[in-house]
Image (cartoon, rainbow, N blue to C red; front, side, top):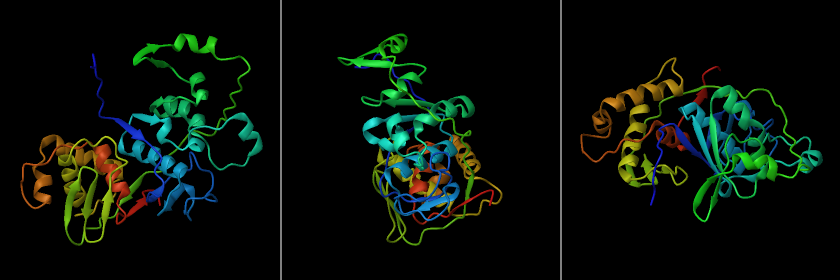
Length: 288
């Protein structure tokens, strides 16, 4: 059993998601050019693809989560693209023109410039130990703070070559409403239908816990696609939606055809994650 549990509405999981749809996302903080596998044809400052690779999908997930208001990002080494997470000194020497700037090079910048914390579950990527503010070791299912031991435990000859790229910047986006044509229904906790022949998978949205949230997300997608949002960024649109949800879920029920009493409040992070995976969505960068 747990002796304590911490909750935070601004924490988001970040994972690799091969084949994901990505639209108008600024991934240039991590990807320097679009000449890599992943199907994208646009600049990485305004990146769109129907079939993202593992690394590009994870780069997009970071940018999207920050745009949606995440203040802490959760990574699991087993669910991450290794070439997005790290690059050792030998690989940097062998492939100096690699377009990918690994998260390893950005993690301190995100914390110190943007105020974005990172929590990583790792078993093989030891490079992060030298950068961590705190290191917790799970031993026989018991957590131990080993932060003070890290410096003395790591061999002195371990090389950690971290580049110092310019500060990360993520271009804000806005949306053009595209109302669904046909039925909108939440089928399971991890899937919904948004119009005819438009199935939306939320399998990678780990923090959804029950189908009532998915129903509410379906209703939120209808609401967000029902009217224009002039001069508003996607983040500002989410602010307005969040304030409305703080008051009541009834407006979502009305958007979905009437008050049913079976909706559960989703976080803005999951609503944004669903919108970002919706292939009929129309994003464009607010600065363009």
